[in-house]
Amino acid sequence: MSPDRAIGLVARKCVVYAEPMNRLSISSILAIVCLQSFAADIYRWKDDHGNIIFSDTPQAGAEQIEVGEIMTVPAERITHSISDLNEEPKAAKYDSVLITSPSNEQSFRDNGTFNVDVAVSITPPLQVRFGHQVQLLVDGNSHADPGRQTRFTLNDVERGEHQLQAVIVGSDGQVIERSPVSIFFLQKQSVLNRAP
Image 1: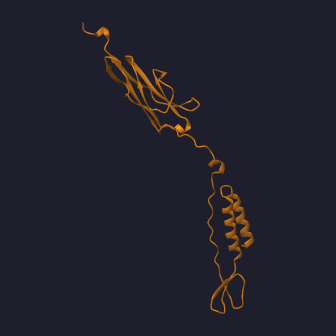
Image 2: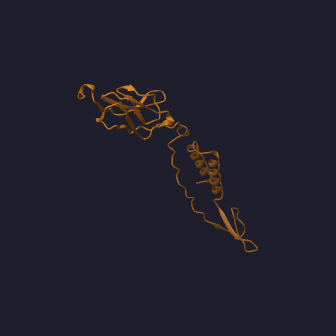
Image 3: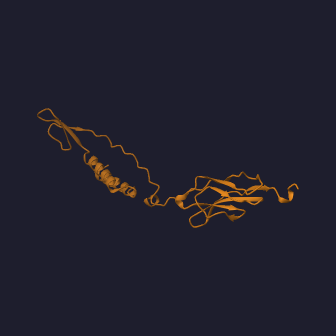
């Protein structure tokens, strides 16, 4: 293959892969290929002082050195473009959102005012950099404004059955994920059941 044809083939390959590469890399590759292709014939001889000289120009008494074929390795085709690299990162899907405390169908007994601590487990952790927040629903109603907290305290809980659900909402207020509904019971001594 002639040096000019080799340079042309390499230049076309570089254009195909040029998008993700910077100009300096392309220039370096082309320079190396050009030097190798122009140095196709190499000659060796000794000068008057016994030094070995290598050149691409033949001299009297020089011997030609056979240069083997230049080994090439095909480049991998890049499957993504620069626009893919500039894409905004996306939030990961939540694997689970669970009410871990109180446990489902747990019963409490109390004779006075009673507070219930609620814990929410989220996997992967809440992605606050995307504006995600947790909303706790008690009996279908919002307990407080959405926020980053995953622990809540319910004050002065009335007796009876209560439903809990954690909801993850995005910065636009849209629901991203919901926990299963968890139930707890609060049993208080009734005034009617007190001994006289």
